[in-house]
Amino acid sequence: MGEYEMAALPIEQDYRRCERIWRRVSPGLAPYPDAGAEPERRVPSGARGAEDGAEAVRGFLRDELADAQVYRCLARQAPTGEGRRLMLRLAGEEAGHARALQAAYFLLTGGTYAVAVVLPPQPKRRWCDALRERYHEETGGTLAYARAAEGTEDPCRARLYERLSADECRHAEQLRALLERTL
Image 1 (tube, rainbow, N blue to C red):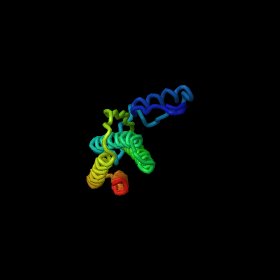
Image 2 (image 1 turned 45 degrees about the vertical axis):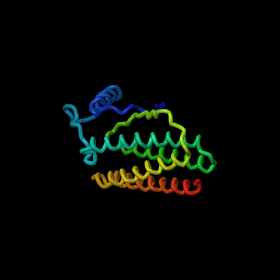
Image 3 (image 1 turned 180 degrees about the vertical axis):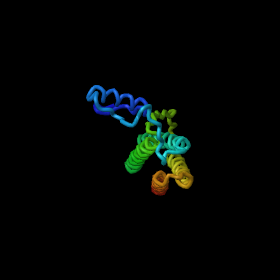
Image 4 (image 1 turned 60 degrees about the horizontal axis):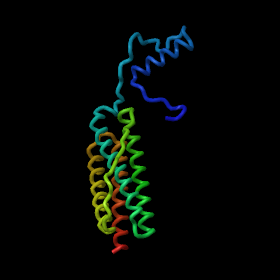
C-alpha cells in the first residue's frame, strides 16, 4: 500500500474513525448532526445481488491471470520471434483483462480480490499443439463472456463482458493465423 493509500474499512468503522477525528479537530461540531446512532449500511442500487456477480468476476479474474501466465511460458517456448511477440502481447492483454475485472469486482463489493494463481509446471509440447490448445481456450472464453453479458442486469458490466468476449475472439483469430503460418 502506498504512502497515501488507506485500507478500505467497513462503513461502521469508517464512521467511528471519522467521528474520532472530528472530536479531535473540532469538538464543538458534530460530524453527522442528524445521526444519533450508527448509520445504516446502504447498498448501492447497482450492487444488489452483487454476490452472484462477484463470484463470476472472481472466476473470470482467476482465468485471466492463469492465461497470462501460460502465455508467458509459451513465449519462452516459441520457435520464432513472431510467436514470442504474439505470446507476450497476449499475456499483456490478459493481464489487462484481469485489471479491468479487478475494477469491476471493486465496484461490486467495495473490496479487492487478492488472488495468486500458481500453475503446475507447464509441459513442453509441440508448438502447434500448444497453439491449438490456446485457440480452444480463447474460443471458450469468448463464449463464457458472451453468456455472462447476457446474464447480467448491470449494463456497464455487460459492456465489459462484451468487450472481453470480443478480445478473446480476436485472440483466437490471432492464434489461428499464427498456426496457419506455422504449419
